[in-house]
Length: 532
Image (cartoon, rainbow, N blue to C red; front, side):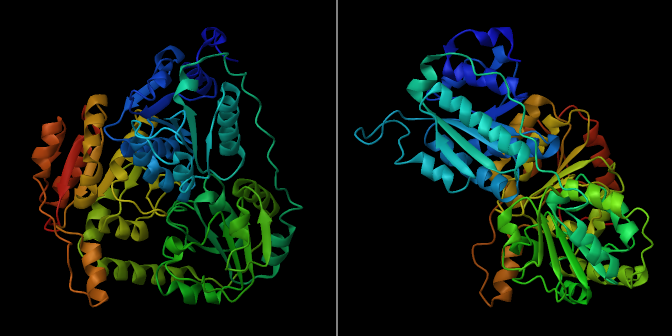
């Protein structure tokens, strides 16, 4: 129920904060301005913590990282015009990676007949709608409340996506009654044994069943299901950890390896769970299957895509997993997969990944040795992460977050800050490249202000190496791939952070341990010259 204070009439901007608190929101990321200051009137009174970002892009990525870490929606407040434009990239990232992020902005009261207003845009609702699930304008208090409840309902029962709500400045300032009490969320459609009957009948006759697990499959019992069915599996990058590390028939997050086509073609049943099988999962147009394909997903667009699944089940992957676990617990699987063959393939593919981007694999191994299984990692678009995405086995799902879909630079630092805020007392690690760091490095000041013990591994290969390599492969003379970098350690210290530049892998391990115990963030500067 709403708190007693929120029963009084107050400006709508203040009522919105009280409403969000009543819906379970504890943290809001944002930047105040003259156009959205009414939204700040009620934040402290409502009992919500506000985190002041240095840029709206940082606020959006923090909300994204917080949502991924906690499973709760990430909420951001931004101003009209440039504030909204600055958060569009994080909203696009959340949209493409299925993350529950809600951006609430102000907007001008009228734009058709009045021109030259501060922060004026032609149509910011349409602008946000290009990167969000939906973008809508609340022209009344009841509309604002209804749209917020709609967003939270969809976060709970549908595929997570980014949403944007804007409220005219005059409406934010106008007195309004408090929001209605929270409603019980709708009962989701549950998948039971009758729904999975087609999968069971196919598993009963399959000799080489193969599961492909995506980010939508996390939070279930897939390792047990794999063992009970004798199935082999791949995961997407977002699905890493769904079967834990060490399952003997796990090919890992290696779908992008060209050789995966042959493995998939050899299966006599392919079951894809909670994955788009998108370009950023496969890096090719076709999955490569020759056998019947089963798809399980919340999103009907995935069920009817170009991969042409024969069996389609629209359901939450966790429900399907629960039903499969119970239905197969007495199975006596006899499949043709060989653990030795899988191990040989994984060893060969690891060697390929390590050779394509030399020097990174040993650093990954050294890092893994000093992290707990509960460490949450946020990585950026950098060659270090591209290697780690393939060779770094994860014990738990939802503990490595990478900007796979939209593929934006600058994601990892602010997202890692949001994740660390959402999991106080637990380890969070950021991995970012020298170029990506410069997109959002100002957010380092937020981590310093909050005293977050956040190690930030900055991989500096002195250039946009991935782009240089791509240009070379395309027979284009590399151009505009080298920028003059600052002294990153001194820069971090100027923000008030700690800094280290380890020269050996042992030094790196010690610096990471020290950083987790510090009273603020630590930039750990690593170059390809680091030695074993």
